[in-house]
Image (cartoon, rainbow, N blue to C red):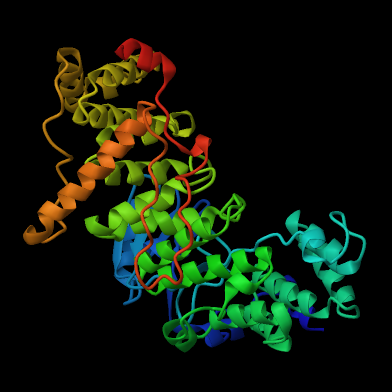
Length: 490
């Protein structure tokens, strides 16, 4: 049975002279192996393909590990550096996979440059969305009243072996094509892309579930990703849950191909086309946030407004595992667009979930942005909060002292952050500035309650039919001023 292949990990591992696993040969264009057997203590690998980054987490002499890895590094990830509790490998491509494998006494780091998109589950991996059985017409809602529905409910709860058994039973029912897609997804979860491709091929192009299989097969094919305009010719003709799965996967494909503005446009079109706040909700919505986070870091300033307004449409944007980093990048983009006070509000609303080691820097940046926005009152509130948290030595640093002096005098900060660089030609600077000031004025009116939330601008050309504009996010997504701060300002 094909499914049983995914559980071969229970058998003894090959010795160090064994050839690479079949999946590695099939999905990898280039492979490299680095021996790190000398490492003592626990070590864990994390792969962030959209950042072109592999992280080895270790607390035992990361400098020594970095030196050894750098000496053995090949062409895939040539840049290596040590941090406090980890080693970072910067790579030449986002199409990455990496695993730690032990062969007897040997511990090796296997790095693969993939032919298609990264297939292993993770923040940048393929989304495994929950398909409500009742909404899809598979049967009753969870726990389900037939094999396919029970399998979907078990998959949602992370009971993968139970789900696999249920979907195999569903192969003998009218839900055969759906079960084949899900057995392929479960094979990926188990780390077996070859078996996954086998399941996807069985139902390829047959009905709506065959279209799901076709989209998944395209992710393994570099020519398909490069030359096919979409994972599906018309995802908006699909049932809503299947449509959203295909739309998110296509945005991911565009992000990995390097076209981040188009990836953001795909997400934005979905937000605007359908009045439904389920799209990009957590936990599957982590991928949406990772795409936007990468776009904030890489797009030029003239595209930054497009990314920022899409971020404002994101449900639960102040929650989740990347909320702090995403708010920071959105705040910096707001400042560069001429709306530093709005950026400070974006930082302030996630203060409660900022890790303690990052809190001082987070609060300092919020205070700086308030001062840049000519709002010393809120900057003083940030200072008082920081002092109440007893942040110690951090408050004695030069930047804090400078912010405190400006806040007490009621003076604005002089300029944007030092690392801001011009990213638009001089001849278009006037047009860019006018757009930035327009955004700033609308956001200021919104924050003071004189206007509704800033409306999203039309999506760029080439993004398909333009749907009707949507509001810039639900009330909880908007960075509202604190009532106590507003009262103090008055």
